[in-house]
Amino acid sequence: MEVTLRDKIEEVLKTVYDPEIPVNIWELGLVYELQTDEAAGKVKITMTLTAPACPVAGEIIAEVQQKAESVEGVKDVHVHLTFDPPWTKDMMSEEAKLELGFL
Image 1: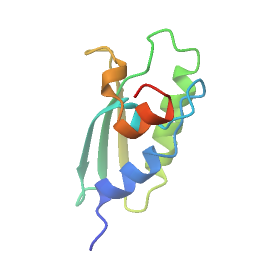
Image 2: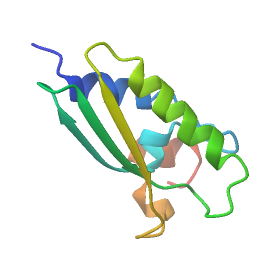
Image 3: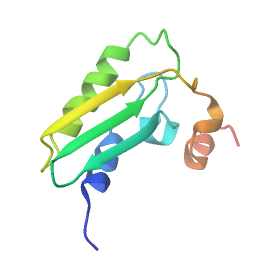
């Protein structure tokens, strides 16, 4: 099975953690949208944070940007931060909910 650019980006996003919660941003449901253009090497990530006043917001966004840019074949990364819709615990994966004791 061929690994797509989207697969590679998804994998690196699973290595970015919210420092206050021991779960990665993908499983937390903080990534709202992931668009890739394989031919052009372009990636657009629309994401949020667990709280608008997150003290490490800049660090998380920078880490997402840096890790996405490090993926082979990526030429351009745009990370868009949004708070619409606001994040809720319901957006977490079942795995994240289990890990944090919400199930």
